[in-house]
Image (cartoon, rainbow, N blue to C red; front, side):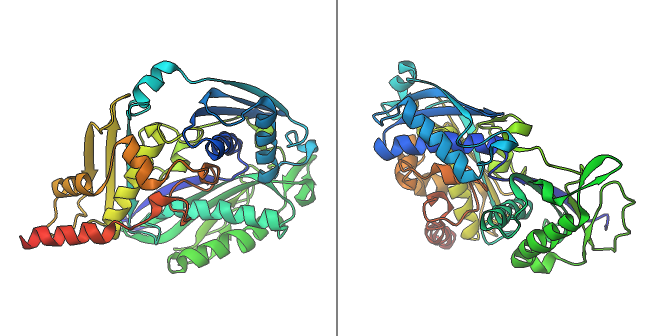
Length: 421
C-alpha cells in the first residue's frame, strides 16, 4: 500500500446477533405501544441469554401491554429473526420470558409533557458522498453483507447458515478521502453441523463452506455495490494454514477465522439492548454522543435528535454544500430548544460557503425542538423494529423519513441567493 493512502474499517452484525436480538425485542415493544397509543412513553430494555429473555423498563401507555402481550411480542420477534430450533439453546417457543416493566417516573413527564427534551445529552449526525446513500463506504458494505446473509439464510439458498453473524470491511482511501479499493473482508457466521469436519479430534468449519460464503455472499455484494473498487481477486485466508501470497490489490477474506462457529446467538453470548451503538450509526466515522436508540420513544432525544442530525447532514451533502458533514446537537432535560448546533465539514465545504452559514441554514430550515423533530420526521409511528437491524441509517425505506433529501434543493437555493446578495 502506498504510504500516501490509509485504511479504515467498520463492522456490522446480523439480525441474529445477541445484542441485535435484544434491540429488536425492545423496538417491537415500542412499536406495539405506538400502534395502540402514539403518545406512549417507552424506555424498554431487553436481556437475552440461554433460553431466557428479560424485558424491563419504564413504560407509560394506553396500549394493552399485559404480560401476555409482552410474551407474544417477544416470541414473535425471536421467531421472525429465525431462532426456532430448541436444540441451539434459544428458541421462540421454548425460551422463558420474564417481564419487569413499570410506569415512567412522573418527574421526567413533568418536563416532557410541556415539550421539553426527555433527557440531556449530545447527538451527532453524519453524511458523506462516498455512496449513493451518503453513508461511509465501510459501514455501508458491512450492513449489506449481513443483510444478504439474512436473505441467503431465510430463502434457504445456504441452508446451513444460522442467524448469528458479523461482518467487517476495510477500505483503502487516497489522501483526499476518496475510496481507492476494498482491502479486507471478515465474515463470521453461525452454522449447523452439516458444514463441519473433524481433524485431530477437533471440529472445524469446512473450507468448502468458506468458499461458498465468498462466492454466494461476499462477491455478489461487493460487485453489486462497488465493482470498481474490486481491483484484485477475493482470496480465502484459511485459519491454521500459512497465509497465501496476496497480489498487490487482492482482497483478503477471513471467513470464520476462529475455525468453528457452531454455538452462537444468545446461547453463545448474552445480548443487551443498546450495546451496538457504532453499528447503529456510522461505523466509527464521525462522533457518537453515547446514547443508544432502541427501545426509546421519540421524546428521547438520544434517538430522535440523532435522526434529525442525520437528516440535516444528509441534506447538506445532497445539496452539494459539502462533501461530508457532521452535525452536533445538544439538549437539557425538560428544555425544548437545542443548546448548541455545531457543523464540521472537515474542509470539504463548497466554495463560497462557510460552516457558520450552514448553521444559519439549519436554524432556518429545520425544526429542532423535540416536538418539531417528531412532527418533521413523523416519528410517532410503529417503524422502529425494522431500524434495529442492518443499521438505522443508509436505508432507503419510505418509513425512515430521516433518510430523505427533500430539503436539499431549498438549502442549495438559499445558499445561491445569499451568494448573489
